Length: 294
Image 1 (tube, rainbow, N blue to C red):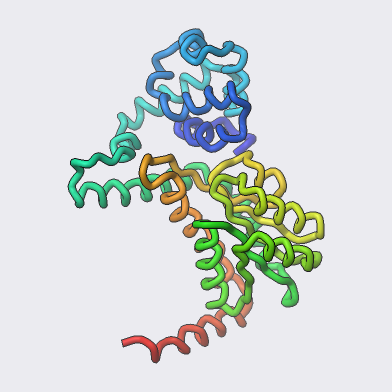
Image 2 (image 1 turned 180 degrees about the vertical axis):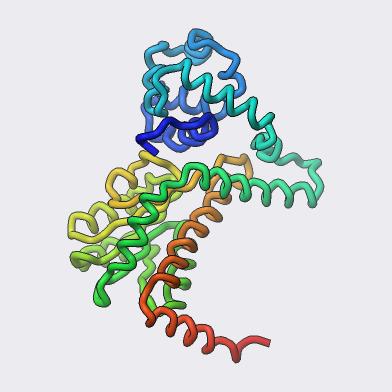
């Protein structure tokens, strides 16, 4: 994606994703692009500079980080996006929850938020990174260890992936405690795989684990919601989702669904393209639980 010109929609999504990693003034520009792109489409660069109380040069700098030659190209791309979609994919309609919302409407909004997060991630997904992650797992030696690390809600994603891997006979380890994570990292060998999940990409001990594992020669993969976050700077491969914040559920609720789906895709690749032993293990692990079902 770095070598091509972004569409208007990609500009909006990418601006949202990189904004946390930018300096204060640039972050304000990126957030304005992500959250007020319809206003931007009708504004001059002077209008935006005056509104944000920053220089036009700062706006131009952010435009270039979004793969645009300048503000005019960015504005043109966003305007085309708005005209083509006619707001049919507008997020704002579903992002606010109100006390007067019916139970049905609340459920509908939550489900639509998840659907939009999946669609938006599909629009910016880095398939080169996904291919590299698949290659790492498919080429691992039998003795290589797999460690999955995450905190809070991210640890649940790790446990789900651990369950999936076990279905095809791949044993992995999940550690939630930061001390346990670092202790296990100290025992990592070259060729091992460490996958870290951090929604913000800034969870310090998860970033430290990835960095330490990489220094010891392990393959490192991050799963996060933000491009250019701290974890993406140290991991070998980065699998990035994109989900917009909602006031109550937060952005990690929808992002969690996307990240589970990304790892489902990785698991599916292994199950289909892996060794015959994976297929045999899938049959064994499925058969062993059949007697526990009605």
